[in-house]
Image 1 (cartoon, rainbow, N blue to C red):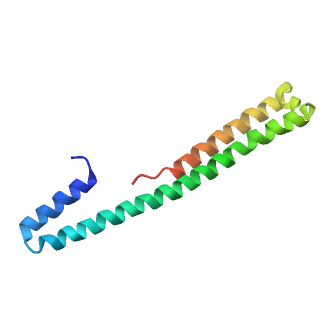
Image 2 (image 1 turned 90 degrees about the vertical axis):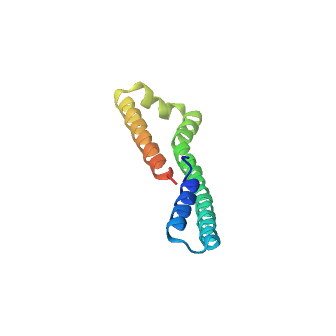
Image 3 (image 1 turned 120 degrees about the vertical axis):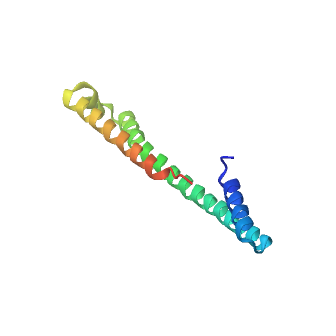
Length: 112
């Protein structure tokens, strides 16, 4: 089976069959390890969800500020859309934002 817990169980039983000893102690140790792994997965999920929320807030701030500035003073923002230099700035900032989102996504995703 592709489940890591079952693989751990099979390894414990195989070692126990070859070496002998106290089976209940080996299974108790295995259950402690599995509980600790589950607890650690919960901590990782909690920490990564906190980081995902922070990334969402940080990622949404520049477009939100841009929208607010456009609503309050549209003349100030029209330069970005009408001038060539403004278009280049928009493209560059979009690329940098995309790169930042990609890096944050890679930092947040944990394999466990």
